[in-house]
Structure formats: C-alpha cells, structure tokens
Image (tube, rainbow, N blue to C red):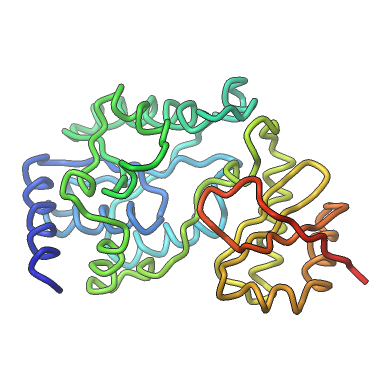
Amino acid sequence: MGDDLRVKQARLEAILRECGSLCIGYSGGVDSAFLAVSAVDVLGPERVLAVTGRSEAYPAVQHEMALEVVRSFGVPHIEIDTDELNNPDYAANPANRCYFCKTELWSGLVPLAADRGLAVVADGANADDSADYRPGARAARERGVRSPLQEAGLTKQEIRLLSRARGLPTWDQPASPCLSSRLPYGLAVTPERLRQVEAAEDELRALGLSEFRVRHHGDAARIEVSPAELDRAAAHAGELARALMRVGFPRVLLDVEGYRRGALNESLVQLKAS
C-alpha cells in the first residue's frame, strides 16, 4: 500500500470517528460494503447500521453478496421495502430517474437513523463519482446524507485495493447497479421488464460470462460484455441468443464494442439462434 493510500485510509478513519455513529445506505456493492466494514472497524458494531432498500429493481445476486458481507464481518443490518416503481416520475424512466429512487431511499433512512439515535446517514459514493452525472447525489445532498469515501478522496480502484487487503469478497466484484439502469431513458420501468432483464443476466452468468449487461430495448435485448470476453461471446452467439429468447426476447443483439459503463446507443450485431 502506497503512502498516498495510507493517508486516504487514515482520513477516512478520522471522518468516521468524527461522525460518531452511522446509518449506511447499503447495497452490498464494492463501495458500500467497504464503508460498512470500515465503519464497524472504527466505531464498533453498536454505532453502525447498514440498511438495504429492497424493490424489484434490486438484483438478487447483489442481495446475496450484501448478506454474505454482513454475516462474515459482523455488520448490523436491516432491510426496508422501497416503492419507487409506483412513483410515476421514476417509472417514466427520465434521465434523472435516480433522483426519484434515492429520494425514496433517503426518505426512509433519515427518520430511521433519527429513531435509532444514529448521528449521520451515509452513502457509498466515491471520489470517481463526483465526475459522473449522478442525479441521485442531489437527493442525498438535499437530505444531508454524507459520502465518507468521497470526502476521503478514495477512488473505486483504491477501494478495491483496500477491500482486498481487508479480505472483503467484494474487492473484485463487477459493478452491479440497479436493474432499471438496463433500460434506456424513456422506456418505462415495469416489474415485468426488470424480471426479464434479471432472468437474462442469470442466463449469461450460467454460461460463464462475468462482466456484462443486458440492455432492454423493448422488443430486443442488447448484450454488452467486457472486451476481454467479447470474442468468447461472439463464438457462442447461438447459445446466447437461445438463452435470452427463452426469457422472452424476440431479438438478441451483441454490442460489438463491448461493455462500457453507461453505454446506451452503440453498434449492434443481431445474434441468430440457429
């Protein structure tokens, strides 16, 4: 570990001590898992609560990892139900969809933290996130939610390095945002479409792919895989097409440029099931 990373880790620990107690919006991804375990290390479990918001948009594979981390590292944890899909502003899937999702989450967590005597509500945003378009961050700011990892200047790669050193199973976990992120803006978010996307991604995982997205384009699925796996995906095009047609997609497209975070409209090659 380099000196700069040690400085940032010490800064994070100082921020956590200054918070005193923490209620964390916890998805079980790389960032929130590291924050939750770090908070328990610094403050003790009696001053930390990780809270997972559950809805149809939350991937089951992410939930499994979230539970594994809290069990293995002694993180106090509860789950609450969120109802963003019944908000027409969210379901219409505008470009600021995440604002409505996070508003729903923090509207539950802020009073929950107050009821339990926890001084600070926090999210897992990191230093890289400040450069991205993140409408959910506005909802956090409006409700006084803090971002200790971002405040400490920790990037995603640095969090992965620290997670590996701490023994967290999430250290090399691919990013796993909510299932709604697989729908291009303007395509309505429905439970049926989310279930279809999740089933399709389960099929790709069963075929041995590790980093990918299935984008729902209404009458077609667009597969993005990591550049390292693109040749393999192309070689098994028929299997991929049949797998996704089984879950109800009439057409299956392969993004020939591979998975890139946030890609929505790229070159496509249609896969044949024959």
